[in-house]
Image 1 (spheres, rainbow, N blue to C red):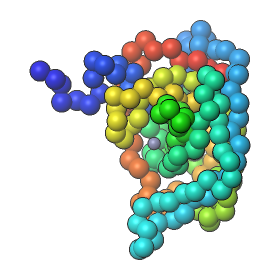
Image 2: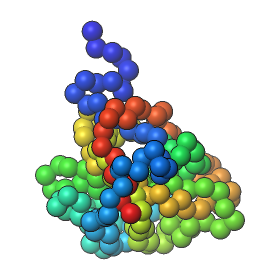
Image 3: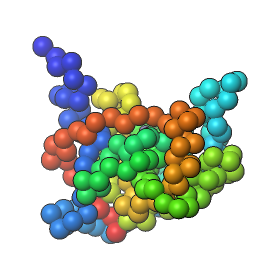
Length: 199
Ligand SMILES: [Zn+2]
């Protein structure tokens, strides 16, 4: 009988989110990056009475190259709090840039946010509808996994920056008040999947 838990599908053992570590216990994961940074601009729109769901648009050509695939940005959203953890720390916010190839492969770029006096430009731009570039990942984890909201059976590529960005308490409140940030799925087992830390 199939387990009702969405996390243990035999056909999709690599589920997200997972706990990530930069410490010596994961030193075997380290590698040098061949990742091509994304380019282009994203504009994020606050929900309103007319458009209760968050909207975004890609305002210029945006693509990311990973493993030879050409991905285009399809979706952008926030999670409150973070879904993944870094060195056992959960952050108040995590943003996801969902990219897709023409033949249906997905790659999600992810960034953590911790509380700070001044928000990262990505946050202030998103909250004020100002076009902003997809940020540099810099050092990041790369590994196969799943979506965290639905379609758990589909294997997708994850790229998660270890550079933790800032969000001010006011801006975090703004995200919460607007309620357009998605909730966080609980942690899933790593299950021996290869996680690479590109430095
Ligand atoms: Zn997400």
